[in-house]
Image 1: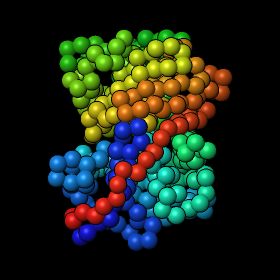
Image 2: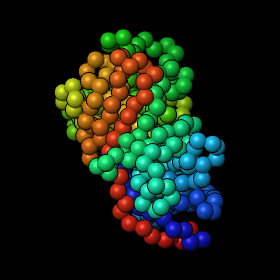
Image 3: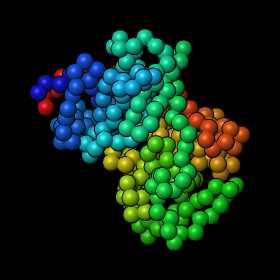
Length: 288
């Protein structure tokens, strides 16, 4: 089959976007992996599918498939910004605010006057069973009332802030993100048996209360240039640990994201807002 696609990127996190608003597109995990393959396909961290809204008040369905595994996943914040940009650029909607349904959530996307996109990422989840994370037999260390969990990883003991942004995250504070063992330790955390569904492993360096640097080893994709949910999880963890203010600029290897969360003043149920760029790289057609 011949398949039209659009290649997009948000802060270096790259995507293949498929428009299924006019006719359904059914692909196998093997075909999604082929699209994500950087040598034999198009190359992408995730494959994004745009489908018509299925319930009142929902403008579109937003489906996300991992470019490495071909599996459908729960969330991708950088992809959500590209979703909004695509819908506007291709005339699918002229609204500046959209509500889209993912596999497990509803997101609100807003196009800003400077053409950046803000995504309402919903509230973080701290209940370990919902991440999910198996803490049986572990003793946490509390900092400012927030738990850091010890984990033995490749012969080293690390302390992790564990939470979900619609997908699971394990964040650790590091002194120098450039020297962090992301390539070697990241996959061990990603597949650690304490995380039955796997986890995104984040490495957070705090520069001051409003600026951080971040690297993320993404579940199923490896280290990416940016991870939107990872940036949200890292900032939320930093705020809960008393290290960050409510508005933080996150420098990733692909660019800057701005994360806002009122945290203690707004309560843990306050929604996280993420703002950043989204750009089209090119459009094309591929045989699958």
